[in-house]
Structures are given as structure tokens and as C-alpha cells.
Amino acid sequence: INDLDNKSESPQVFLENYIKRMVKFFEENIEAYTLIINIDSSTVDTLMGDINGYIGDFIGRNIPNTSINPKILGILINGYIYYMTLELFNGTDIKFDEKVEGLINNLNLCF
View (cartoon, rainbow, N blue to C red):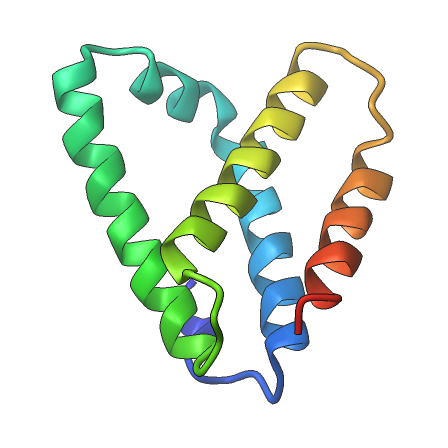
């Protein structure tokens, strides 16, 4: 995602690009990611803390001057996308693309 860093002309464009990139990441890595979060919690807590810290800093650099906590926003986005991707992976008919567009549209209302 580094190629998205400081490249967008608006928070809305950044969020749309970030969300679509994370959708692709989870679709391509859902099995590995699921294994990571299901291993020993002491390992995962540190790893997830590092990931959430990095993502929060990344979002904060690209959506500056907002009252929204970028770390919480990252956790919300990634958690939602992970859940939706996992449902899709498990064969649940959830209208995935429609849900992703809904996430993008709803988050854009915040900016």
C-alpha cells in the first residue's frame, strides 16, 4: 500500500483506493491471515498491534486534520473487509461487491 501514501487529492479518493487494495489483499491471503489470527494470542496481540499501529499511522498521514482516530478507522475497515472476505470464502452469498461499495459510500459521508 505504500504506493498510495500521500498520492490522493482527497480523503474520499484515498479511502476508496485503500479499501479496494485491502479487499484484494484479503481475497488473496484469507487462509494465511485466518491462520495468523488463530494462533497463540500472545503472538497475535503483538503482531496485530504492530499492524494496527502501522495502518493507523498510514491512514493518519493520508487523512490529516480529522477528529476521526486513524487507528480505529483502520481497525474498522480491515475488520469489516476481513469478515466479509471470510464469509465469501466460506461460501456465504453476501453480495460482497455491494457491501464493499456501501462501506466506501458510508465512510465518505464522514468527510
